[in-house]
Length: 550
Image (cartoon, rainbow, N blue to C red; front, side, top):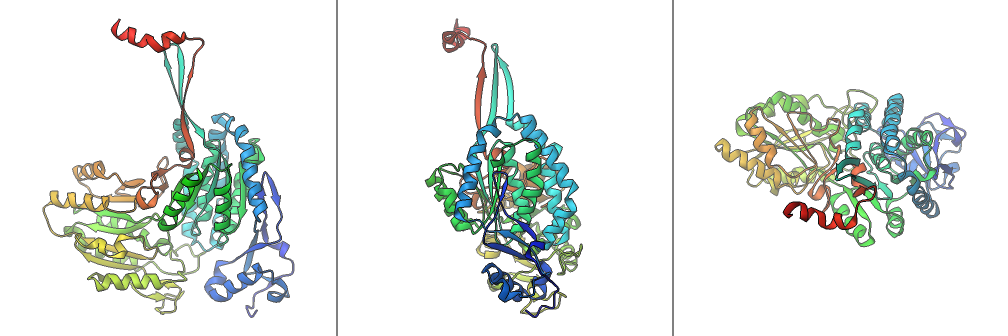
């Protein structure tokens, strides 16, 4: 193999996960192998070739002396029968789990899970690093999980699941009931944290089936089998409440769509694929819950603290722009433009490539960068100005057209009028490319209306941010922005906060039914209940009229 790496004589020494169905681990004749992210940086093509050959079953040909230490784990690839069995196990568990009191399946489940995440935080982060997430962003993801299951968020979920009122001797309830079997298809770029977000659907009383993607299965299987499953076991939940299987998306989604026992499908993916999948779900009688692209707008008013705004805007380059919830474009008041650009570029110079375990590294490899350069070229051809970046580079930061990293790139776009004609503005780029759109000079009232109109014209709707000190400006802006699942004022764009949603949005972000995504709420439905000790039916029908009019 020529890697010079030490080897393991026995594949059983690897971190190994089987399919997890109905509380049991099911073996498989096929495996998906995980190669350490550092090996990918050293020789991406050799590492991918090794992974492919191992998954073809060519273990003796590829590694006659044993697997190299660069192979850090393997996950069983589920066959169709196992996928179908996972759905049936979930369906068999729903009725019993839905009857469990909220005090257990919401309050106690979240409390235990929060504690277990906290106890294993460093190990969760380490698994994320093995799969290629920079350490700083791995820790950020773990902190988000802790907020999702923290006491303030849990209290909010609980308040939404049941409300009671008294009326005329009756006890009235407005409550949310589980949809049933929920299947989750997480994204390739953040499967572990997305699987944990989906676990909140369990608190609604649903049973969950999760597909671990072949590109990053290790983290999903780790958190579901070693973090979530023990909590469910401690609570005495039926085995089928949680199921995890690894496989290719197309055949697994087809099984879910064809199964009469599946109720909801949570789908992460591109807007184009997601909108088409939404139609397939509706045709099959499933509830689609879509988590698609984001193209977030940050608005910077003339009185903004440009130093803090610039600091928040550097989040655009975290993970090399391959996160859905980062700033994708900036609209700035012309009076603040120069100061913002100076502060932003100064900070961008400190964002560098490196190995994922380095706590100061925020960039990740971009294995295919041709779309980045075509998008950049189109913007420049149409009058945008290159303020910083624009090149590929190697691990050490040296510019190289064959490098697997991209420089954080800042574009200046003059004027709102034609900005959306640029692909870099109109669509999510998923690259470290940030257009700063400097508005045309005008009086402040006109500019504020233009800013609101520009933000609302976005075809996507994940997050929006505003930087402004004037309270009237803040109120005017926030009263009129209706798109998006989250709106933040003078704050980090991606920082997690209790009670507020981490995902979800409108337009091409969430599809026809898009909104802020709390899976516990999105995978449940409202039901009204009246408890009476024996009201007279005729009085219940006609009594209200007599009370009003005699």
